[in-house]
Amino acid sequence: MRGSAARVIHIVSLIVAAGTVAVTVTVLTGRDRPSREVLSVRGADISFTLQEEAAGTGLSDGGRRLPIERILAAHGANYVRLRVWVDPPAGYSDEQSVLTLARRATDAGLRIVLNPHYSDFWADPHSQEIPVAWRGADLVTTAAKVREYTRGLVARLAAQGTPVDMVQIGNEITNGMLWPLGDVRDGTRTQWSRLAELVNSAIEGAREGTSGRPVAIVLHVDSGGDLGRSEYFFGNLIQAGVTAFDVIGVSYYPYWTGSLAALRATLDGLARQYHRDILIAETAYPWTLVDPGLGDWVTSPDQLPDAMTVPATPAGQAAFFAELRQILHDVPDGRGLGFLAWEPGWLTVAPKPGEPIPGANLAMFDRNGVGLPSLAAFAPPDATGL
Image 1 (cartoon, rainbow, N blue to C red):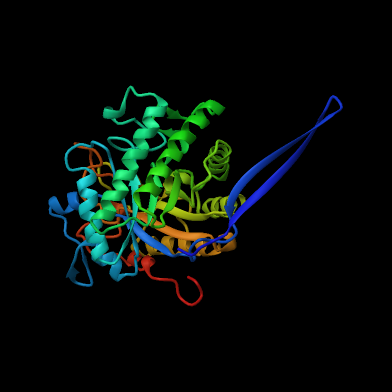
Image 2 (cartoon, rainbow, N blue to C red):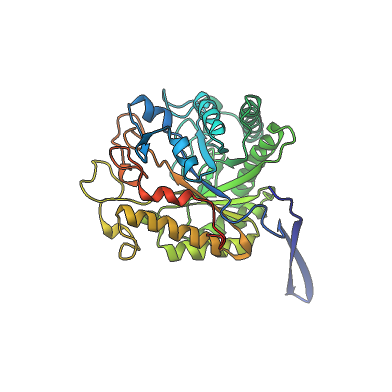
């Protein structure tokens, strides 16, 4: 991570009423320049890996069967994201799974983005359930627990020789986290203040767990194709007192969040407004729509805003990632940090026990586990920055 000077922006508003002039000063903090190089993060969330391997899934590339982290690294990837739940169903992304995958990733030369959900299972804009063991506590007690929990996770990863490079605080926290304490769906100042206390506690815990080693803090929303929704979240959270973060993370799934043009507008707008690096923290695109599975999320070209130019074919999937790289390259002030593909090796494991697999046609391997052309997306930038 490059060092960078802090930037303070003062916004002065004059309000004239009843002959009185009131001056309001709003202070936003950012950075004068990006903290890392453009496209310096090229990786994937591989949290299902141990479950896939236990189910017998094998992946190959160039005729060689290899673990997913080795295949990604061979194509130029340099990061993995690992999610962790507090007390999930057996086999699903608990702390021991994270420690195991972190050792494998580090051995392959990959850096780690740690993603605690602060929940026992999936957390997203529709569900941010507080862990069962944490329920019933007040805000102050819960914030202290969040700080302790985050510090412990980060410290234990460091202790085994796999220090984290980035910590993503929660998952798609557009509507808050740790409901009901951190719920901001009504948008009141009190709600944003409560969420800010929880997020700041998590940030403090992450930094304490590194024992002085630099760590980048990511705040993540689901709205990669919606600038207004994204600005609403970050504007309110910053105003509530959350400023000690480094990276804005967004999910971008075109079948849910809009066209590539909408993505470009969102990333460019966020970079200009908040002066922070931008990470596409989750993304995926189908490589086929033939013989869709029972639970597949994408089954028709009508779900793809750019289907005419980026079809659901192996070559089209590769073209999608090439477009992402171009959009990130073009983010103002060199703030296009990079991308993390969503579970490129997810072929057989149910998202929840008993549910059908919904995303096999979104993987970067075919149904036989053979690598697809889209793996080229992880290559380091060339002399042009692409």
